Length: 109
Image (cartoon, rainbow, N blue to C red; front, side, top):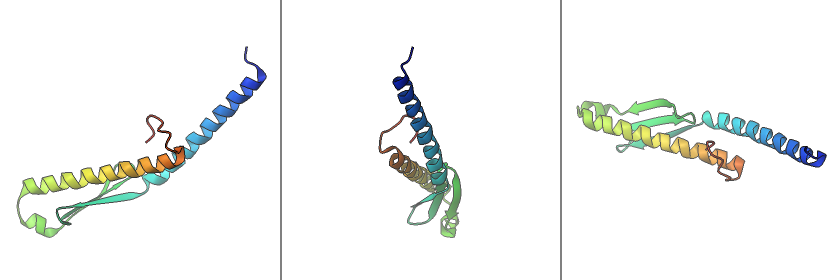
């Protein structure tokens, strides 16, 4: 049997956890709408990724296409997208860390 003071403490803990979860979801939704950018190849390739890690824009300077080196083009695109994803992940971790105070809850950041 649970004592009344313990039940109140447990209820308060659950309420705080629910509030924290709701705040976390709001922060994640807000951060997901933000976009980060990575540029490689001296500005020849630019990738933009949102907080959901979705590629939302890829810009190629016409000069890179005129060169005809498809291997170089592929490598630059991969590098730009991967770097943009790393930046988006870091941005999301920073946003979540701000909310959690750096507590590092598993699976949320």
